[in-house]
Image (tube, rainbow, N blue to C red; front, top):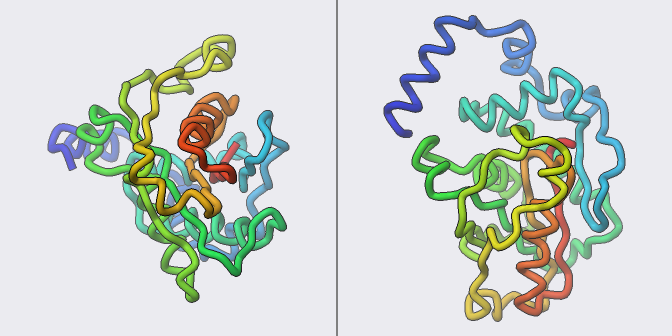
Amino acid sequence: MNIIYKTWNLLLDAVFPVSIIEKGLRTLEPAQAYEIFPKAPPLPINNAWSVFAYKDERVSRLVWQIKYKRSSQATIIGGYALYQILTSLDSFDLNDQIVIVPMPISGRRRKERGFNQCELIAEEMKKLDANGRLLIKPELLSRVRHVNRQTLKNKAERLLGPKGVFFTDSKLTETFKEKTFIIIDDVITTGSTMNEAVETLKGAEIAKVYGLSLAH
């Protein structure tokens, strides 16, 4: 992890002590979280699903713990929740392999954090996949342009979408083009980023591309 980023996190911990909610997340079992956290409202885009309602403080703190603190327990909960919704949806043929593509982050963001939170969640999903159906393939989608965080923009700016942000190499995807692709993200807001990622993969002649996120 970037030393400046790590130092900043330590400073935050010193100034803002761990909240009761965050303490609770450390001991919460994944199945408990999946059961008690409020489920997400319908998404504003098609062929995508979210698990939890982001407006719930427990959920927003869960995402924050994964994204900025690299909390192992929060990541386990996130992976469990996404795996549960994946296996419960009729849209996916669980007898075939499914290609999981973590939503990529920019090089700048990776340098700041030292990790991609969506890749961490995907790895936790993989641990639950006893039959080897999930193929984790972060290399199949790249973010070629850095954009400001969606949460820092107003709604009109978010709806415009981050055009030209993603890239995929059709030579890499050729082997998997007949399979189902699922892009996973931590949060979907307006859906513009997920839409752009989905359309990028579809541009490589991948017919079945869906989106899953931990929260909305």
